Length: 418
Ligand SMILES: *Cc1c(COP(=O)(O)O)cnc(C)c1O
Image 1 (cartoon, rainbow, N blue to C red):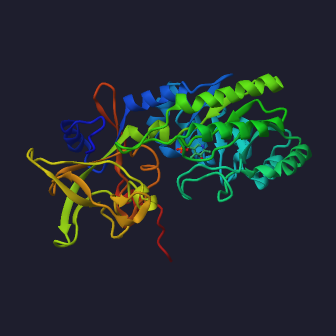
Image 2: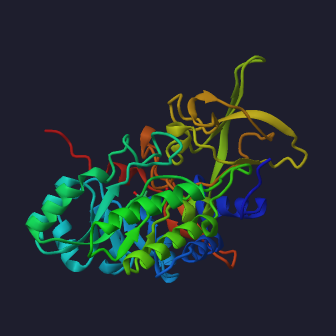
Image 3: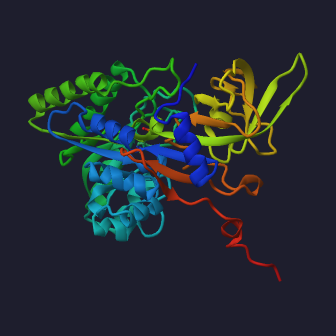
């Protein structure tokens, strides 16, 4: 059975009393421990660890990481701006985006690192800022994500420039006088050292083609075990062959390449609990299912509905004698796909969970929601307001870091038709 990670039942009740539910609670101690582990990634000639802020962009989280020496990987010009507002310097931010929006030239001039992620982006940057130093994101032709929704390398992925287009890239660089100083390859969730070793070697082969490159960014995608029986990536283990590849490359070429990594999931996933209240129950007869209905769902945690992702769920019954029973846990949206207990990787299939028997009014915690949950909701579906967020400090204190949205805020940009 899954257990609460960093909260106690008493602390959870205190949190509900203070801030209500649904409530995301981030744990400062876990965020710090993960940051330290990322900063210890094996490297030969220096390391920059960036937080892929799309995983969890609240300013309080960004500031905490900044204080620990972590820099930023941004996925849009809006994230760049958000990171700057949270206190990062432009040159502490790297932008790799699917949509290079207006305003990128200004950001580049201010010192933001920009990785061209397509041929069109390369041309756009060349037109607007000829002569600049830039990065290029490659699709190295290999991916390791567990399904098409998480795979971001290989022929099914639109991320980065296909590795066979080197000549086209070189022609454009020459045409615009651009200087490539960084190569970037981010190929998706994986924890297999042999895959990381292969990616490092393939990426270093690309570095050979670009004599001005001094930095290689291997992206993120370090798998984290959210459930008890899932393994987390050991960065020391996967980093070792990467370090060796960099050393060997230096022996052969005399070039000492700086390493960058950009974890999102690894830094944040297990550092947050979503606290909810059970607001209804129902069952569908003796051959059916028992359902717990929460005051949250795809409006806060979309991953189970989207890809059958598994999150630990812990009911916190008031009844101290509660025994285990099987439940389907569902969200509050009028949407049959709003399910928190799908079968693994099969969002269409229900899979009951054994949980402590619980009733209306009891608390229910969903663990492992620090990455791609508060940041990636089915926001305002059914007009439910966006949940509040709190930080559980190392002192045990709970601090609000985002207020619950109001109905007025949901409506504020609506304009009455003539
Ligand atoms: C999303 C993303 C990451 C982080 O991925 P995780 O799987 O959360 O570690 C890193 N780099 C880039 C370019 C990304 O788009």
